[in-house]
Image (cartoon, rainbow, N blue to C red; front, side):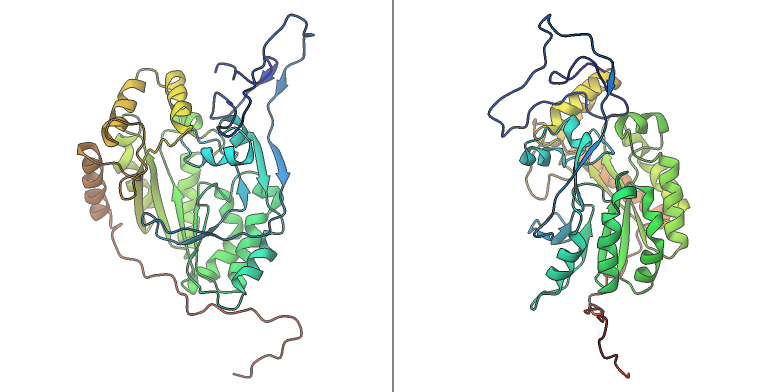
Length: 361
C-alpha cells in the first residue's frame, strides 16, 4: 500500500482499509508531509487507533428518509475501527475536522454517559415510542466496545424501558449481550441485522480489515438464532464485478446458520468514498477495477453515485433489476421471505426506581 500523502514516511500502516488520509472537505488548509533533507532518520512507528471521549448533550438522531425503515437512531461511536473501505459513513468524519480516510478508522470518538442522556430523552413527557435503530452510521460492536462498553450501557437502558430496538452490526461482540437480547427477543422487542459481504476470507480481510471473518459472523448468526433472537442477514454492500456472484452462496450459508430474513444494498460511493474505493481497487483488484466502476456508473446514470431517494440504495437499470431478481428467487427458495411481526411498542414503560411503591397486580 502506498504511503498516504499526509503521513510521515516512518509511519507503518497495518490492517487498515484506506490507503490515504486527505484533509476533510471543510478544512481551509491542505497538509502534506514531505522530506526536506533535514529530517533525522526515525524508527518505524505503527499507526495505532486513538479513542477520544465526547460527553453528549443529546443522543437520539431523527430522520425523515423514505429509504429507511426507522425514524430514530443512536450511535455510541463516531468513526469505526473495522475499516471497511466502502463504508458510506466515512464522509461524516469530515464534520469533526478529520479525514474520511485513515482518520475514520484510527481516530475514533467514544461517547460515555450516553445511557443516562438516552434515558432522559425517552423519559420525557410526550415522547412517542418507535423502534430505536443502533449501528446505522458506525458499528456499535467495533473492537473498542470491548473496553468502553458504551453499546452495552445503551442496550441496558432500552432493555429496562422495554423499548423496541433494531441493531445492525458486523461485530461478533454482540454475543456478549445475549443476556439482554434474549429476554428482549422473547417479548418481541429486538431484531438484529448482521452484515456478510463475502464468504471469501482473504477478500474480506482486504475489504473489511478489522471485522470478524465471514465464518465467524455466520457462527454469530447461529448463536443469536439459537438464543431466540431474530436475525436478518444483510448482503451489504453488493459490489458489482467483485462480490455479486456470491449473493446466493451468502444467503444459503446464512439461512443454514438460522437467519430468518435477508436484505441487500448495492455499493454506494458518496463524496470521499468514491476515490477511496477506486484507490483500493487499483491496489487490491486492478484486474476488476474498470469493470466495477463501469457497473457502478451504469447504476447511477453515468455518475459514481446518485443520492436520490428511492434509488440511492440499489441504483436502477439492468444490473439492479438482475440482482433484485436473483435475491428474490434465492430468498423464496431458502425460506427467507416469511414476514416478521413488527417490534412491539405497547410494552414501553418507565422502569421502577429504587424506593418506588410496587404494584399489587
